[in-house]
Image (cartoon, rainbow, N blue to C red; front, side, top):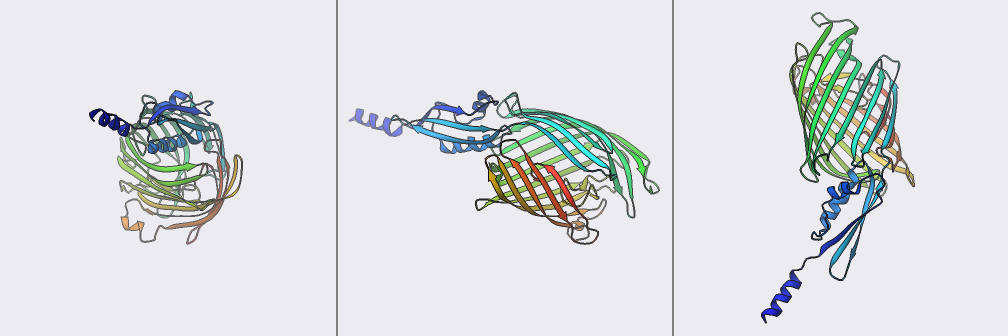
Length: 414
């Protein structure tokens, strides 16, 4: 009787296991890198939730366009799991053109590899001509040390013509910033990751033109050290051009070494993003961006109203503030899709308010700084090249002192 009991207990208690994990479709991405990230391991207990998590995680990698899985079960209740992977092309040149801040021609060229060494590391740089010359270089390896712990470094020399706003007029400065930043990256789990880093910079402002108010210096400079932290919660699911789920990204900086108008400060920003599939071809996308900084009464406030950053159609850096609240909402609809090529339409509303430097938070809600810009756009998408979304938007302002304009860029606006 005891023998029968032990045999039955062994049968009933036996759990299905994974006998083998196969990975198909890899060309440039290293197989050991995928196995390092995968939660499913040969010999582990079969868990369908872990498989789904692996697939969602793989689709977030720059080097992977799409991933699916197949399951085979043998007579001994053992499973063979096969991950079918479709890779992205990841050596991406970039070329943007725009109207410079002085009304002349401006452009930016770049080249990035998003799957360096087949390990989804990012290496690249850019050159920009916008009145003045700027350049920068980046290297980021999110899984350099372990499957959770990575490293990033970047250097940027940004030189631009920056409008600085006073009560009755605008003054143009030449802004020159040389900055080196290093970061440590850590992924707690599939949904949560964080970064900590240090940014060492030298900033200089030199007067160019305009009616300079009394007491405002012709030139300013500061050598700064910024301690930054970033925390991301990501529950996004990606299916080629379609996105669903929720994401929150918090970035905070404590800036030291300031002087005069370029003071020590705290700068914090949080993006809340929500995406929802609408039918077979629709996608509703939303971003709420909240920003808060030290409320110094300085014309060099950290948050700017700008075409490329937050409100399409406004123009290049038309206002500044020490707190901001911006909502971008848009409906994306696939008009045409065949093979790797997609044409997607876009209808959007961008709206935001700002706290003026030294002002009250009530300025965010009293309507005095409200910007409201509806618009239309179109996207041309290559499904198998990472971030190959060419977008063109036209925003039309409603209200006093409004403007309108076309915004061109690479990648979805958010």
